[in-house]
Image (cartoon, rainbow, N blue to C red):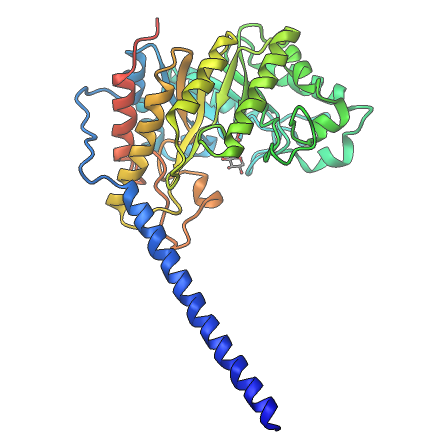
Length: 396
Ligand code: XIL
């Protein structure tokens, strides 16, 4: 090997080693900074004491509010301990799967002309037997669609298929529903990148029916059940980052346009899947958004609240405090808006949360996003929700 090549290889080796050490130093520095940021989210002295002893359902009712959760039919019929706790804490039941076209192991729509209402009927009966309000989720969405949908639905039959679905499903429970999420997540996931002025999500419904599919869905639902509150449901409006700001504006524009058309939309559903590690919670921008929605003569429901803890420290005491703080900080803002009528968590207990699958922790530890732990005991998150309800103003 020539002297030149030898020197070159040594230089490359040293550069490579230097780069590795440098990279290692940078990544170590990054993880130290991240840990410091996350620890800063924790306030070991924050007070989560609850002075009024009531279930979340009762705390809410005393203020003219509704508190409740989503659940799966199998959880309610196979886990008696959970079902009893759910009845005690919740004033409203939302099927997590059973009123979607197809979700989990449930298939409401086995075929273009078929419906299987067995699970949905079971949940409606569970709600009425236990004096729970019943909420439908969701009629028109781009997800949870059965396999045949893509093969069957086209420009010629999309309207008929939408009408048939909504009339049949809403009609079956007419008079029994508190509310329906008629259309879910119609705004683009990243509205900044959307090529559309209305920033609508490119879904099969938009493709086959155009932007008026939203108005059409609400009109069909209103005709099928004039008593139900009809809700437009979406996520990603909670924080101060640019994407959230653009999404808030896109949702406001959509709601204004629907109201101008005379669309029978009665409320906005805000999913509120919060990020426990976020530093971008700006109360003022969220509060202003809620005020502007209310000005459209719309009610507001928090429809799927939980706190994603996947990036939070492993220590349970720290994690639970940060999660509880996120609940209480957020609810302090939303419950200040009189148009907010309900707080619904996406699940009630860490024993059953979709975040275990959709936002698992990299350290393999169980996630802890909900008011009750896996043994159904109250967590600080429960205290945070109870305190928020107890501190809110009465809704007449
Ligand atoms: C989720 C369910 O929890 C999952 O079990 C299912 O696999 C997918 O849907 N926003 C929504 C809900 O509107 O319908 C989603 O529920 C969670 C995000």
